[in-house]
Length: 118
Image (tube, rainbow, N blue to C red; front, side, top):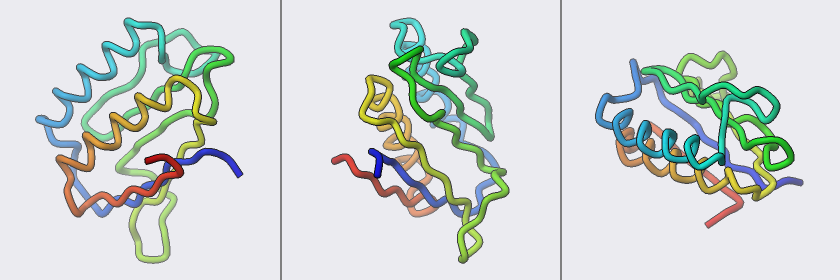
């Protein structure tokens, strides 16, 4: 068992622009602070588009990549997108939680989150 955040996403056309404004602030600050990048071993900027968010911690402070993709092909039995990210409570976990909380605020009932965290 690992420390995991899971989400189920109903069909949405895009991540709302208002959400992307807030998410950009969170992700840009975390990237500038050296907490996240594209992959733990790939020094590229994180991804934030109208359909996708992708980042990981850096080096040994990374674990599984956080990848939120509204077009993900993996579906739960009810047809919703189902995805998860195990962070092992490494420093980038806080950014994962901030991103999920922001998405929940803007997507409301269209996003269901469960977590080993609080």
